[in-house]
Length: 106
Image (cartoon, rainbow, N blue to C red):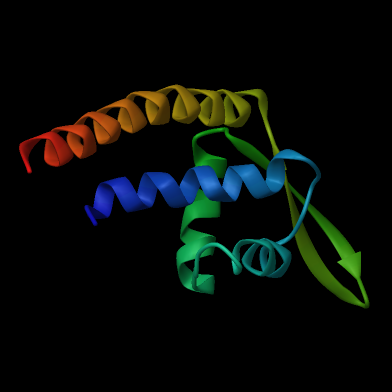
C-alpha cells in the first residue's frame, strides 16, 4: 500500500476513535486493534501531527498517580473525517468500475 495513503488512512482511523469521546493513547490502540494494528510509536507520531494541525486537543490528567494525556477531536478533525468519507465514495465508485470491467472482460 502507498505509504502516504496508509498514513492518511491511519490518521482518519485515529480521529474516528476520538470522535465520540476524549481518550488516551493505550485506549486508542486497543480500540483500533480489531481493525488495524498500530504501534505506539506510529500512534504518537500521528497524534502529534494531528495536534499540530489543530485536528485534536490534548489535556493532561492525573490517573493513578500518573499523568495521562487525553485527546479530543476539534471541528477541523471532524471536517477531516467528513472529507475522507466523500473521498472514499469516489474511491469506491472507481473500485466498482474496475471490478465491473474485469468481470466483463472475462
